[in-house]
Length: 180
Ligand SMILES: *[C@@H]1O[C@H](CO)[C@@H](O)[C@H](O)[C@H]1NC(C)=O
Ligand SMILES: *[C@@H]1O[C@H](CO)[C@@H](O)[C@H](O)[C@H]1NC(C)=O
Ligand SMILES: *[C@@H]1O[C@H](CO)[C@@H](O)[C@H](O)[C@H]1NC(C)=O
Ligand SMILES: *[C@@H]1O[C@H](CO)[C@@H](O)[C@H](O)[C@H]1NC(C)=O
Image (cartoon, rainbow, N blue to C red; front, side):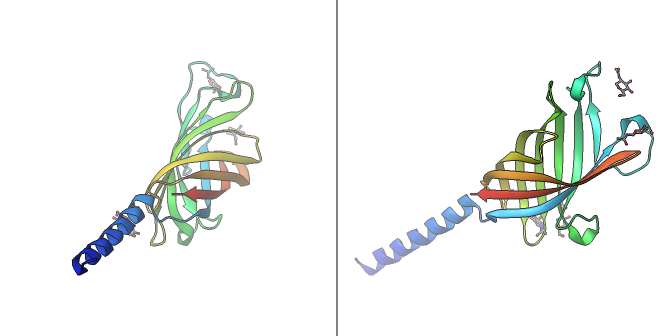
């Protein structure tokens, strides 16, 4: 092989390697973090407490298992189950709707956004779960930034729940298993 051909071959390999890296994402194979949610108590609509989730739609008549209700949320993501800002790593925004007619069931569509020097990008999830299940699963259907082209499964468990008169406050733990 002539010298110039060898150089071209090496260049091609380098270009392919760069292309493969940018096309496959270089995010982590797994992640763990916590999510906080404070759902507004609708019987106290004028309460000034800070909520992260509010009811944003409901059927004209109340249904069993709140069938048809939709909540909009913007919840903080943290490395520890604490609202101390030093633990903040991002947020999750989306909607959950009550989609069960025989058991309390939620359908969620949501995007997790991370904005730290370690992780910068988004992950989008879709899934349905029975509220009383101890462990809940959702599909990771894609990502951007560090999480570009992600696929995976999110495992969600309840850490704590408290009904304070004006809101229901919960912490959840998330484990994400990801492929790119
Ligand atoms: C639905 O139920 C809530 C309380 O559970 C009540 O405040 C509201 O008036 C009811 N709405 C309808 C349309 O019946
Ligand atoms: C992300 O972090 C950078 C640097 O800390 C900050 O300037 C920017 O406003 C943040 N963006 C969002 C959407 O939070
Ligand atoms: C994350 O990426 C965005 C867009 O590339 C950039 O504007 C932002 O500063 C980055 N945030 C951090 C914390 O590096
Ligand atoms: C919501 O507020 C009402 C009125 O104070 C109270 O009766 C009810 O128990 C509260 N609900 C929750 C889930 O805390």
